[in-house]
Amino acid sequence: MRDLYEVLGVSQDATEDDIKKAYRRKARELHPDTGGDPEEFKELTAAYEVLKNPEARANYDRYGDPRGPGGGMGGTGGDPFAGFGDLQDLIDTFFGSAFGGGMGGPSGAGGRSRARRGSGRDAIIDLVLSLEEAAAGVRREVEVTLQRECDTCTGSGAAPDSSGPVTCKTCGGAGAVQQVRRSVFGQMLTSGVCPTCEGAGRTVDSPCPACSGQGRREVTETVTVEVPPGVDDGTRLRMSGRGEAGRQGAPSGDLYVRVRIEPHEVFQRQGNDLHCELRLPMTQAALGAELKVPTLHGEEQLEVPAGTQTGDVLTLRRQGMPKLNSGSARGDLHVHCRVDTPTKLTERQRELLTELAAERGEEAPSGAGHRGFIGRLREVFGG
Ligand SMILES: [Zn+2]
Ligand SMILES: [Zn+2]
Image (cartoon, rainbow, N blue to C red; front, side):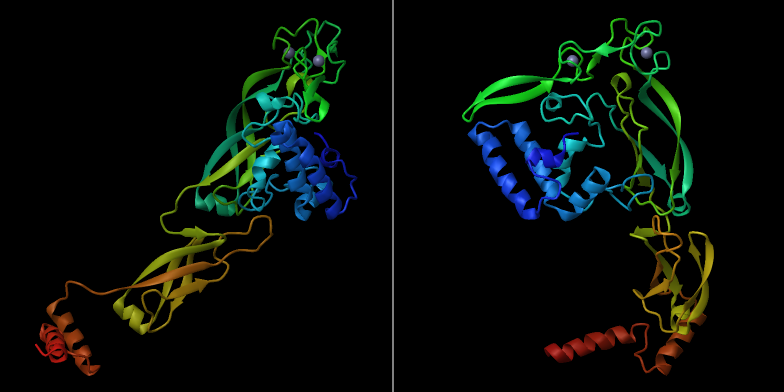
């Protein structure tokens, strides 16, 4: 990959101000409106977007990737790219997207980074889990069809009995060829992918018969995915180097496992908290009760206080989802109460409720209350 500091023409200890000035100077030079190369300009802007952001710059310095180590197996919660927002498009310029970066496409020429030259593409697969599986963590065997290193030539692309790959004569092993372009600023050197070796820097005289000199073959294999407890819908787990094999021994891409979580019939998830609804008979809501409520792992005792109303929320601490990568920390379970008004009363029940209403000084049901209400309306409106 082309070094971001090199792209901006600053040293690694450049201040934020140095970076800003260098960007302005180079942007004037490379802007497409003044005849600059759009790819180079995009590369410059992407480098600037990373280096001006202290967090992204620190990650880049430390891990060689502005997204940091997150997204690795059990990296950060949720989308590992969250927090950079619009930056993602720009970062993709350098690092390839999870959906197939690496070489290929017209943008493979010029600004494409050297380290990724010939590298295997990233692959992405979906893994559907139940909420219980997401809470407990799970090991899953998943079948993927990918380009993998060829066994016959161990990725070199050369026939086993031949002398092996040789340095490309066209580009001298650089994988890129320089071209002189004219622009309003005079002659400019740009580099493009070498047409002979397609960027690999090496060619084979006698190609491997099993893979036709590609160094890789399509295989279907079973991958074991370890899903840590606490993953959320959309979490991406990265299995470094488990994507497609590179050309002729170049590095492999990464395999991304995108987690999907099925809707649950009892619980709704919000971050690490869970929510569920509890329907209470009117009498229980009024008198209070000790109830058993479902949790992700069996039933728990819940104390419903006397006088509970519809909409009241009772919380069971630490009965939610585990927090991803944080030991034993867990969210809470919020129980939303809903009081059921009885329907279909028996004669006896009606009597009891009527008695209760009288005892409480409330207007009697069975029509009297209704008339009373209309009567009051008549008083107010003089009807
Ligand atoms: Zn082969
Ligand atoms: Zn070449």
